[in-house]
Length: 249
Image (cartoon, rainbow, N blue to C red; front, side, top):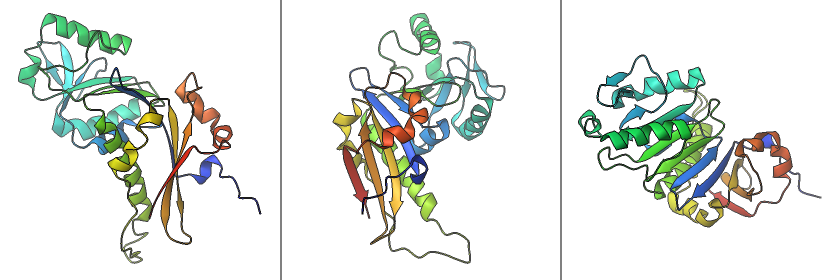
């Protein structure tokens, strides 16, 4: 009997990833701001390059608003509800903002306007790890990483969070007892580094027999002009055989 093909809704999650290694940025589609923050760990303070946030702080030197680390969770909620473009860069402390030269401040304004840097987007004064640029509906984001190995850690943490949510006890009184929960490691995800440079779709699903496992399928979709087109063509894309499959038990 022919194996039944999975439709888009049979998967737990789909994520498009396209890495530009030379310029140190990654295009994502299917990654929200909240998922990004949860997957990379605690953020430093963030300087808003385009957005206005009434509950934030204001830096007189740059004339830009910023969000302190302790307020980032609240900001995530507000940003998700507002459905506006999101452009920010992280920084270690406000004293460092005050050391930015006029040239560096102009470069930051350029990033917010053009969604690309004049030169490197990583500043000694700021000690930033990321530059985050997303469109209004979060269907597409362009994120610069100081260390591209953080991408694999992000992917592993994202997929593992979905697994943990799926496997958590249904209720307090009906606890599912599991010896271990399947887990992806960043080392596993790093094996896809070359494929990710061309643009790929990760699709994850769960199987129960013969044993509980989670499976990641990888499909090359480098021919797409606009990554957010994926969601209109998802079932068609999934008819194509996966180039690589990874399974964890």
